[in-house]
Image (cartoon, rainbow, N blue to C red):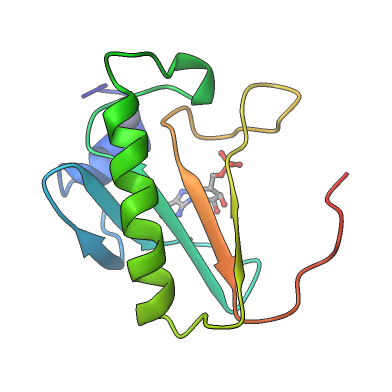
Length: 114
Ligand code: AMP
Ligand code: ZN
């Protein structure tokens, strides 16, 4: 855990969130500023700062996250598809420095982001 990380604070229950899924490794909650009808953030329960910090030691969290995403998508009714995004670093416009995957769906999303 990182003391100054808002997503670690969410994991510790110090900041409220709208939880949609939780297990031993993964936590998922609704984005506070949704960009689509479904906009969920899926995060590891260990503080990993970004995709740039994924290593052989912590990549099992990423595997667990991607096992969970189809379950959340199904529970959200995203049978027509969805998008998973992680922003990394300054150029990626990452604002929260705790690895997170945006799960977006519920409408036809734009073809390109950049
Ligand atoms: P990023 O720009 O990829 O780092 O995404 C960070 C996301 O976290 C943004 O979409 C924010 O709306 C979202 N966010 C920030 N604070 C909270 C919070 N307390 N609860 C839920 N979502 C949040
Ligand atoms: Zn954190």
